[in-house]
Length: 254
Image 1 (spheres, rainbow, N blue to C red):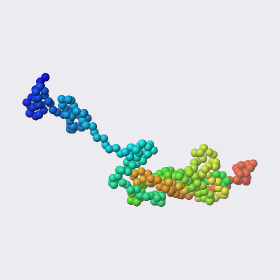
Image 2: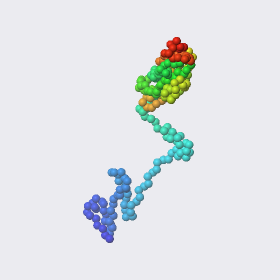
Image 3: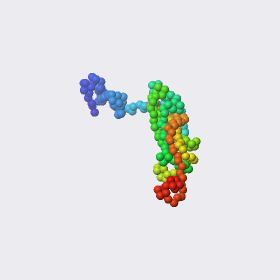
Image 4: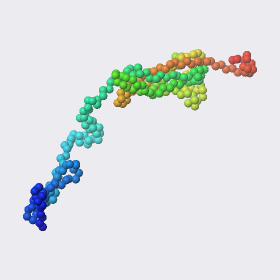
């Protein structure tokens, strides 16, 4: 079967008459090629020719061997991270902070209270309660803005008569414990003599600092002592009488 070429196709070289055959040149766009890119596949009388296969990237054999061992996975990725050098502008130098550096930020002290109403009876338990919560204090250290977080971890009670006790909490009221008055508690104390005693509690805190990139714990503890509380202890005497004080003002205890 004979084919013909137009004069324009012949002039631009797109068609060459060869006897009874017509050879038409051109390229075929490979599907998936990026816009504007036409690698082209020559088309001849024997059909399209396949495009050359892409060259695979080189294989890091050491990394492949490392992955063969499941326990070495983390070391494999650590090796890849070692090859990445951080940008000098992204490096933040964290100053070395000690517990003595954060003492001046002064964590909150705690005021101790004795039940009932800061009054007690000789020979009976007086219940003490102190409160302290986790809190933060903002400031500047070594020229950097920072935040210190204080967390209470210990309470040292001083009852004013030479007796002390240490607990991990500040104690609870009798009402919160669902207990009757003068019931012994973890933080209660029994005075042996009447008088006025100055009781106080020192709260021990752990600390962590944040310079804007996350919390860093500090080794050691910070102690904050609250103001002393005056506790009045009285003696109580009982006697079996036949009449009340109203009935007989001269009765014992009246």
